[in-house]
Image (cartoon, rainbow, N blue to C red; front, side, top):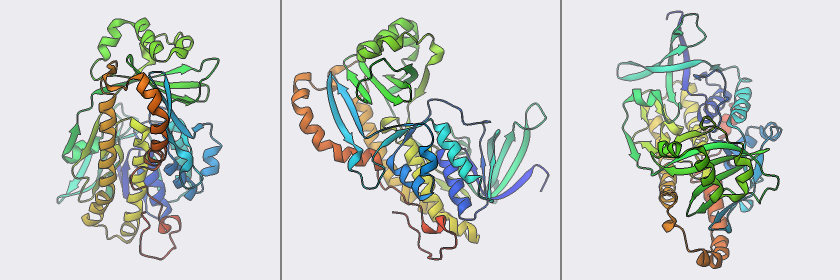
Length: 424
């Protein structure tokens, strides 16, 4: 092994929610794990910032709730939408079992730093920042590690490094380098929308917390944050250049027509560089694994922004992976059958949630076309009854999703001796 080669039990590409959670859990179980993150820090805005009740349940299992609560964030019990001027409270998390009946909004970098600091306490955990994976290493029909480039090197192109591992995990997001290198087949679903994200100051008088405003002029998402709104305008896929051509004043006017109380904050939006375009996609791998290789999170299944569920499903993947693989990894008996078990467990809830998201995306798929929206008079009469019926169902669907995971006892306490796992 050369000086640029390293050896670990598990090599995880991507220091996002899935990668860091998996690294933390495996390290707690006594598995040697190395996480590679291509950036020098986690300070990237407009990433998934939604923390669902199931994620809070997991943080509680890890004794990280107090540390989480000490970080500035916002929380809502209900999700309101205003449709044609009619307010509907369609989602209520208060009825969920457990003590975390709130949806929380926190910059993702704060959550990642929390997980990183917890993982750093484990002697078998290594995090390599400024290290971008470039490909897979294969021997005898099996993935045995990755090649990577470290920006910490002295050469202009960075130092090349090879990391060999019993298991290589792609957790490097929807633009996954390792997913592409694996050659695994991706099934893609057409999504009719893109999203423009930007930040606005809060107005002098806030309305009740409202997640979405829908009208014949379009759809605007308003995520309440400490001192500001994280705002999104849904646009037809591929129409970004048309918006730019009409000018920033026309863009501000579009937002103001949909959400009139944002008129004053919109004056602070001064340039197109303050907006970020998210190209919405829904896809999933048909097969998530190869001998020695596994994809999880967005690398296995890109989710749309609907319900902000992507981060939660990525973390659930990580928990299921640690629960099912920690023992065979620690005992040196990992087989392809173990990897197949991950897909058998996580594929069905992913497929179901993506099906729900596709329905939602079709409903809001043509912003500015009021044909998808109910008549205001009918809506105002029907809304109270519909909301009462949907609150518990949508609270469960959004807050917990399909098949939420629980961290197994042998992860929380590696000396625990029962051979059965605790995926629930």
